[in-house]
Image 1 (cartoon, rainbow, N blue to C red):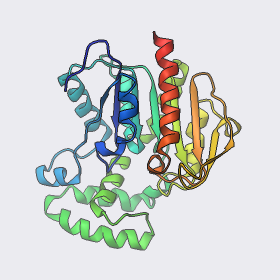
Image 2 (tube, rainbow, N blue to C red):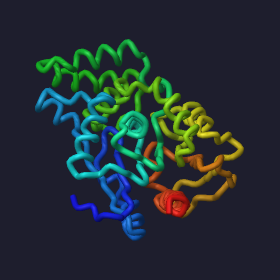
Image 3 (cartoon, one colour):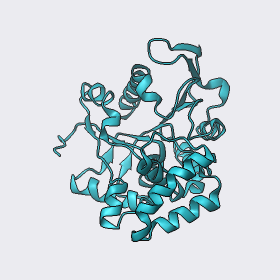
Image 4 (cartoon, rainbow, N blue to C red):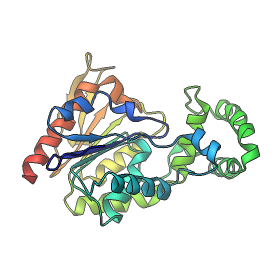
Length: 281
């Protein structure tokens, strides 16, 4: 990876599961602004099962990202974008690593600052996670997960290892520590932009609204869109930022709303980017 000196840096991180392809529509927009856009892919559950290492805790993911950034000689990130559970290592990098300076943050469908409903019943998810650490049980646990998902009516895209990875990642994310961290970033005046969808089957709307409030943005100040996609989207409520923090909601948006509304996402992120770049220069 070659980072040109003086170029602003954007670091985008997919959720669990996910790959760098999640940001295919955003990268060219920022590249056209002269940004160096770094979009890695984190290890998946197949890697874990093959190596019996990397269990996707927030500490492991943060440490991996720190080593990656050090290896490519990046110490300053002008904007970091995180989807879903990647908000947690992003917060840890922003607040707990003195060697890395993150100037602004974008949360896309963040997993929130308390336990989400999809981790219920918690005793079952905790037991599953613990048993999954036993190598010879892993294939059986993948088979068992199919029936657990059906029994509990959990959202699932028929990629069972992805569903398991999502649960393990969020359970080991230390989400209870996230709220104070978001509030501290707000106190420090770090610019933050957040997107969420009201039809997100993974993240409760109440969890998203609570996090928006931590950014200082109440419901009557959120930008609200209705419609299934970019073409049908209508602005129902024109919101307003609280200082340099802004929140956008999609009434029909899911956990992957950025795939349905790429133009709206890109426009808001680009405005956010340009506003903060002007402030920094």
